[in-house]
Amino acid sequence: MDNPYFNTEGYPDPTAAEAIRGISGQRSFGFWPVVYIASPYSGEIQKNVENAKRYCRYAISKGRLPIAPHLYFPAFMSDQTERDLAMFFDLVLLTKCCELWVMGDVISEGMKQEIAWAKQRYLPIRYIKEADL
Image (cartoon, rainbow, N blue to C red):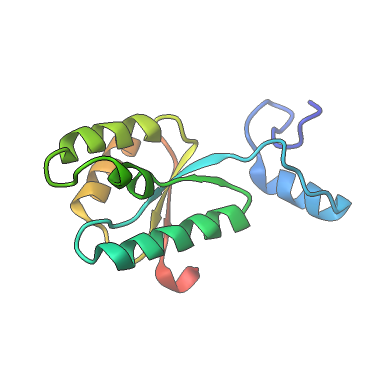
């Protein structure tokens, strides 16, 4: 295959692709795997929003396109009255991603639902602790 993101058997191989890009000095904007960013929202909302933004920047620094619905849906949906609908939308978006990244040291109830959904669909889950950022 011409795309170094896939190995010779056709399976995704992002580690090798990153190494090839690093050796050749290329900066590719062609294909970035989409990852779902799971982190707390409720509680200390302003702090959690800032953390989610930081987690998204981290994903970008690793060559991934981050999806963080808790940065998007609160702009036009109410967490108090439309939480179930927002959670449904979150899970729909999660199925469009190639990985779930569980960010930080706290796992909220909403994140537990996202993790369970990912496990049901055999979606790879990556846990990234605050100390590793």
